[in-house]
Image (cartoon, rainbow, N blue to C red; front, side, top):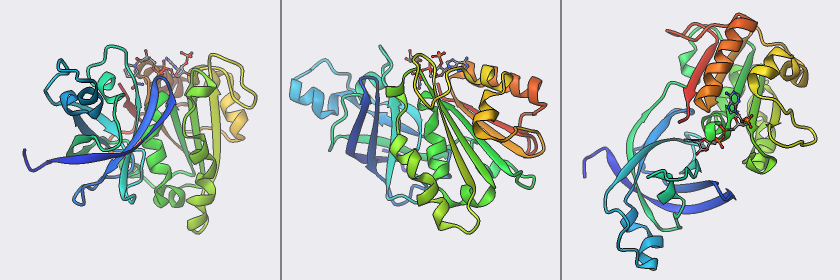
Amino acid sequence: MSDNVQTVKVLSKTTWTPNLFSFTVTRPESFKFTAGQFVRLGVNPSRLAYHQQAGNSDAPDEEIFRAYSMVSSPYDETLEFFSIVIEDGAFTSQLQHLQEGDELLLKTMPFGFLTLARYQEPAPKDLWLLATGTGIAPFLSMLQDLQTWENYEHIVLAYSARTKEELAYLDLINTLEADFGGLVDNPAKFTFVPIVTREKVEGALEERFPKLLVNGELEQFVGAKLDPEHSHVMLCGNPQMVEDTRNTLRDEKGMAMNRRGMGNIAVENYW
Ligand code: NAP
């Protein structure tokens, strides 16, 4: 095995819905990353306890790797990941069978530029984090990093899922401001905006991001304006959402993609 691939052990698994789950693994001591980054995780299906217990001799005996961003903060002792189960997906259809004690592989070179460090100009006052589905993962890592709370005056996390059940991590989200903001002087004010698009849920917005920007409902919910001078915006999730929302921010709000440290919008397609 090459130097930059380490074996990690599954410590726990949380099932949110039949198609959404999270898991934690041991963290190699040498593995460092910045909040918001991705890593490559590998699984060899034939080695999973699930297949061994079931005597599934046809489980593939090969390593399959996929990119996953950390939910956990750079300071946590373990690593946490959030996954969807993609029907017929070679990786996640195996990963869904993970059990405590299973081993995965981790390529220890982190990557991805959805990090605060990409903004080189003096930080504007507001940080808007807009996610769909499992694209919330890098934002949860950033929100468990004190620097995020120090850098801004107001942080907005808007999280869009099809159903209420698919809005994961609500308990963590509800304690972020007290747990992390509470540790710094002048912590950012935090506003969480739940968005559920396929059923009515009290207290949640109902439309997709571009529409919420055009009709003003997102800003109204938050009680603040998105503007090029004062806001950094990060988008992560469904690639079509990223494209549509980026275009809407450009056309409606006069915002520009962040390049060489300048500009408001940073994006990551999550799949
Ligand atoms: P999703 O379809 O991305 O929906 C999550 C949220 O994003 C919903 O509120 C949805 O609204 C919204 N959304 C979708 N397209 C949008 C757009 N163009 N602009 C703004 N908002 C948009 O749901 P998912 O559960 O993450 O993924 C669902 C499907 O994608 C599954 O079939 C899955 O297999 C496939 N997929 C997902 C991943 C992944 O990592 N998440 C990877 C590969 C494939 P609506 O309810 O209005 O659609």
